[in-house]
Image (tube, rainbow, N blue to C red; front, side, top):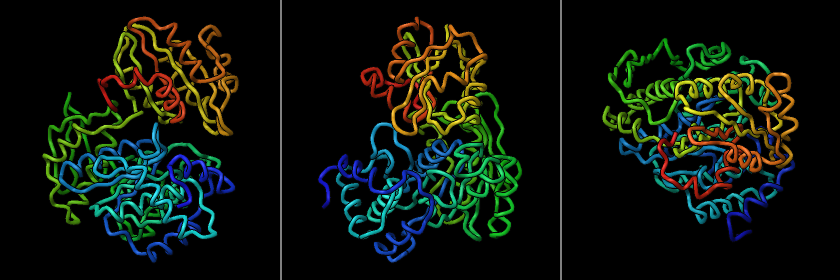
Length: 434
């Protein structure tokens, strides 16, 4: 084995390929063929693509399927605190040993083929899943869909969550262009479920060309909320008085409704153990860190990985739905390729004070760069600039009083940095893990 520890493997992978992002399936396909002769994995696959709601949808699907007694695996990215979070089987993260052994098999098979960090992770997840006798894998696309490493594997069902403007340099600068990339996860004659009632027309056009049955929110399945309960139906079945998912935000009903359509299709395809009891249990027990993850205290803390306008719009609505006795202080750091101005515009009405910090690394945006997006929109005394996001958090915490709340958001890197910065506080029991 080339290395003995997971950190050593990961440090090496970060420098192995000439660029961090290198879309395309040629390299990863060659290595997979050497490992598994290009055979289809021995389990069902649901692939999830979209701009927002992917992580929530994966978590909801996994929770319901697990409650139904199916051996379920998930591959997601990026991670918050540990790389192992990316590869989960029956709710348990893969061990360092499992991942290192998978990396070794990949390294041996690849020979002179250069693989990116994400390609190594995707192959490792698939390799581990093949050895674990799972029933179904839920694979989250990293970026786009058509050329994403996850798309090496044929989806039995494709789920496309709401599409917004993100990664525009790579995917295109309109919803229609981005829709083409997301629709790349579809397979001919296999169904696709769209969380949006009005997905980009390109998604529908591609589904028609592939003869892939498309199930669109509001047309082929519907949901409605009634107080603390909600109802769902499609042409074949209905569920009344369902509990709200244990993920905060009215938009989680939209995610859950699409997930139930996927569940309906899986049942029709033979997964008959999924009953209404499993659905209810799955909705109530779902957990997902970093998505409006709320920790109570004299000063409430909220962690959210939101980093684009669509996500910021949802976050603003949720902050309005959950009133705060005091002030709301935002601690934010973002990557350079994100539209921070659009994020600010969505949240300006619900934030009292802004604490801006910088992120390290080539992709990180400095606090001064961030501040330019607020200039002239609010008074200078409401904007506080620090070199690092940790320093920004310290300033927010020093100024917060009982009844206030601190919102930490803008990137997975931002949330990770503060979770590591205040580990004792994070280890407290969560009032909501959303």
